[in-house]
Image 1 (spheres, rainbow, N blue to C red):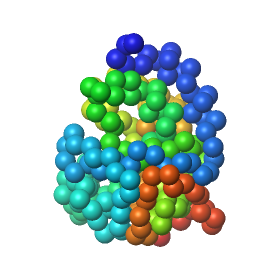
Image 2: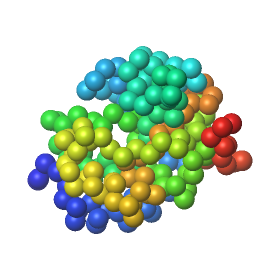
Image 3: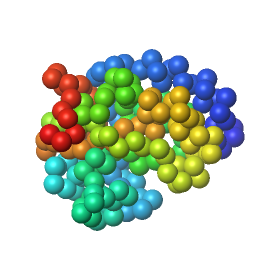
Length: 192
């Protein structure tokens, strides 16, 4: 098997990604990132509005900051589609997991989860961020240039193939085997 998926292989997998359930995705592979390149897989994590995921690097070394220098709350939690992960993460022994907070089999597109959509994950409540996850240079090195280009193809951007970023709006605990649900009432404006 080639180390990276080709564009043709990624395109063949797109219909399965787009046909994922619209709600109730199973939460799998909870991952903590205490430092660069470090991945700790756990059965449950706590999340807070103030600290994001306590013990993670968001509060001290975020990749995105607000104009005042504070960590951007919209990148506290990262969620990736199980189907995308299965397409790109081929060598699970020698290639590091992408580091998303959790994996789920759910439609993460803008059409299904618009910016501001509230989600329940265990006892926590998350809000879908306006920040687009475009796959960093580390993604390109680990999973190939074709996958990064596929994610950022203009026709694909609304699918959010690199996953969604969320802010914590209610402290709580997320556990493996919980379900990710859209909350009725839909979305809050980004300013709320």
